[in-house]
Length: 108
Length: 111
Image (tube, rainbow over all chains, first blue to last red; front, side):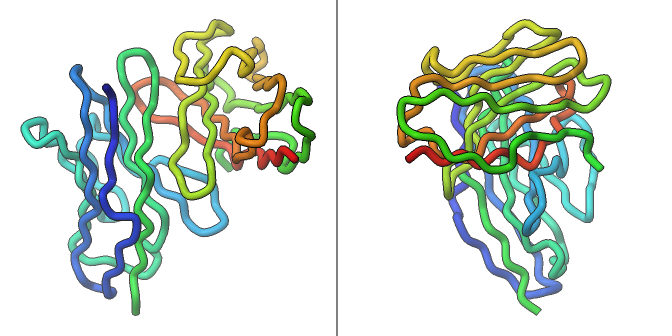
């Protein structure tokens, strides 16, 4: 069964501290993985996708097939990073599954 | 401006009624997906349309149906509304595997 798990509902760090938002998945095929972010009073928006191997707003995420994880990391958190973060997996049938989300709060 | 607009923004319906939600996708995006997001949860995939054909469906009953039109607009129809259908409904357009652009959603309340 296809599943995305974000084990932390809430995560709080201080400004300048490293942050890691965890995402684990279960899927028997080759997954397409994404991180979406929702800032306060804004719509859900794509942050990054694993196929691009890109860094957006200082965030990176590495697909670890052995551990079936796609954790989101940033070395130095900023207050403007405070938001709701969703990990998502799209399967071969165009079914996109989202995790329950992690609310990140970056304290000054 | 993301280019995906949804209407209406809020809606209140009575149990048993039918509802139609509308979405205008970003021009050039052949794929549109619909999601249901209950309070405190991540979006749940309802179905996806590609060039006016359904090409993917989540675990939702047949009373959830959709249409996609050639002008990049689409509809989500829900028949026989139940109280548990109260949620935020999101529309997203894009092309696999690049990710999707989301609308702001329609908040449906069933009473």
